[in-house]
Length: 539
Image (cartoon, rainbow, N blue to C red; front, side):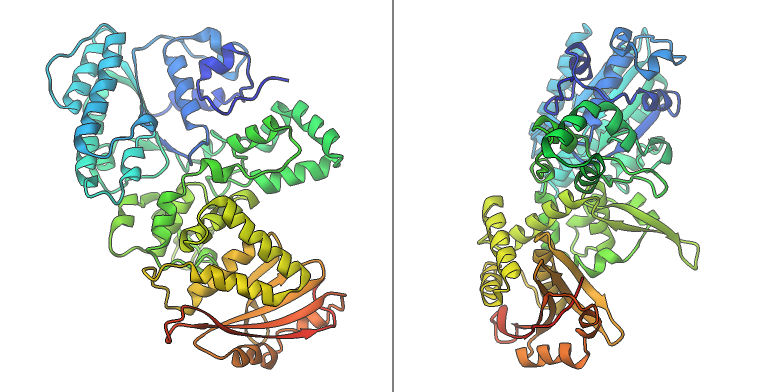
C-alpha cells in the first residue's frame, strides 16, 4: 500500500518517494497541446498546486518522473524550458508595499536560479518583464501562477484592495504582452475577477474551469477511487464490517458529488479522501471544515439577503456564473446570484442539473455536493451569526444537545436551546424578515443529520419544516410577531398532518408552532405551542 500524502503538493516528491499519485497526465497532455495561455479554477485543497507542480516538472524535461504514467506514451517531445513558477498561496501581503516586496523577492530568487540578476530597482511588473525577456533569449519561457487570487480574496474588505488590484493587474498584464516569448502560461485560483483588468487585460486566456473536457482534471472519479485506493478500500471494508456496497455508498455520500460541468461525472474531494484513508478508512469524519476557508463566506453571508432554503432551490443563469467577479461582493448591493457563484467557486455548492428556459437561457441548479460540505457550511453559518457559539467544538456540542432533545421528544429543552442561539446574535446583525429566522432554524435542523425537509408543499399550503427522528416526527411552523396559538392553529387549520397520519406508522407526531418577536425588540422566540398526537406519522 503506497503512502498517502495530503500535506505536500510536490509532484516530484510524491513520485521519487513512491507515494500514491493518481495519474492525471492524460489531462496534462490535453492541456499543453491546446491554447498557450490557460486559466483553471477549483476550490481550495482540490489539487491545483499539485497540477502546477506536475507542469513544472514536465516543462523542465524531467521525463524520468513520468515513467509509466499516461503522458509517457504520448507524443510529447520532453524539451526543457525555463520555468517561472510563482505561488501566491504563500503570500500574506495586505498593503501595496509588502506585495511589491514579496513579488520582487520571488522574481529575484527565480532570476538567481537562472543566473539573471536584475539590479534596476524598478516596480515588480517591469522586473517580471525583464525576467521573461532574459529567460526567453535561448528558449521560450513557461509561466506558472498558482492561487493568483489569494491576495485579493484575503483583502476583499481592506481599504487597500484597489491598490493591491492595480499592482497585480500590471503584473499579470506582462504575461499577455510577452505572448511571443512564452511557450505556455497556466494560472490557477479559486475565484474569478472577470470584470477587472486582471482578466480583461488577459483576454487571451482560455478559461477551462467549466470545460467538460477538464471536468475530471482535479478530484477523483469513481473509477480512479476504486483503482488507486483499492487496498485501502478492502481494508476499510474488513475493519468496519460493512458490505462493499454499503461502504462505497457511505464514501460517496460523504465525499463525492463535485461536478464542474452539467454533463460531467461527479468527483471526490482528493484531500478528504486522502485524509479518510490515512486515518484508517473506518471513521467517516469531516475534513472539509478544516481545509475550506470560511471567513470570506461568512463575512458575505452576514451582509446579504440570502435564504439557505428558498434561494438555494432557485436556478442561476450559467452566464452569471461564468462572468461573476468576486469584487462585486464588496459593493453595497449584492445579488443572490453573486453569493451562489461564490459558493460554487469555493466548493460549497456544485452543479446538480441544467435546464434551458423559455427564452433560451441556460440555467443551472446548485446544491451541496455531499453531507460533509453541507455540515461544514451550516455549522460555520450558525457560528457566524451567534456570538455564543465561539468555536467549532462549542457549536457541535450545542447541535448535539438539540439533536438529543429532538430524538427524545423534549421540546421544551429544544426551545430553550434555540432561544440561547438567537440571544447570541449581535444586535448589529439586523434580521427583520420572517424568512431569515426560518432559514437559520432550518440551518440548525439540517445540521442535526436528522431527516429534515423545508418548505414542504401540501395540497393546502407550505409547511415551514418537518423533522423526523427514530421515534418522533415534527411539523413546524414559524411566524413573526404572531401568537403561538395562531401559529399552531395554522398547522391544524390547513391539516398539514393529514398526509403523514395516513402513513400509519408508530412515530409520535408533534405539531409545533413557534413565534418570534421583532416589533417589541425581543429578536427571539417569544412563544411556542405544541400539540402531540400519539398516533402515527411518517415512515
